[in-house]
Length: 143
Image 1: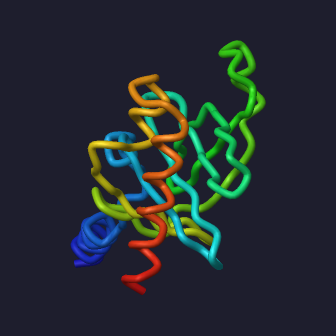
Image 2: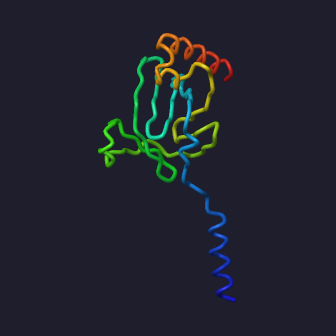
Image 3: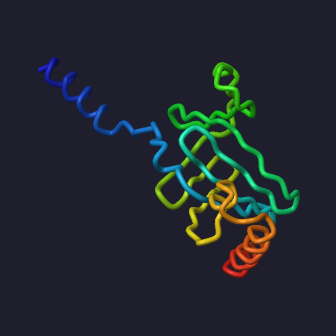
């Protein structure tokens, strides 16, 4: 009887254990964030992600890694510096349309003019900037 209870407890605990590993496939693509009136766009690919801040007008590239329920990043693009990844944020919730970091939420978007097009050199910065402003105004109007 005692063995039966122990076995059942082990099976039960393994069934209710939540999966914390995040598949990178959820991250691939274009995202935006509007927190405290600060709008940014993000683009994730295999090993790198990019952040574009419309107010600063700059694009920053990071290498990233996922470990369990956390995102680690490294500003250096030198692949030999793998040990220099720093903790960025805990990922509280994620699916194919939204990622909730501890202090920021990203929402996936699809548009014919996106941060991906800009990064890949398919559109010019002025076209991308004007589209970002339109997208920002639209997102603000929906809140």
